[in-house]
Length: 82
Image 1 (tube, rainbow, N blue to C red):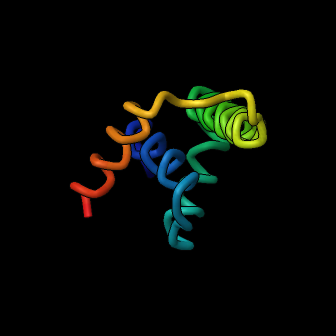
Image 2: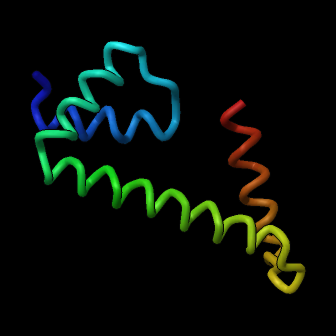
C-alpha cells in the first residue's frame, strides 16, 4: 500500500510521464481510499489544465512583447545549458 507522500509523487509524475501499470494500479487503489490524495490529484489536474489554457492564450497574444535585453538574457541562458 502506498503512503500519501508516495501517492502525491506519483500523481505529480503522471502529469509528465506515463506510469508503469503497477504504479497506476497502486495509485488508483490509494486514491480510492484516501480522500486527501484524491482531492490533491483533482486539484493538480485542474491547475495543469488551467496553466495549459493560459499558456495557449498567451502564445497567441501578439500584444505581449519582451524587451530586447530580456530576449538576449533568455537566449544566453538557453545556450549555456546546451
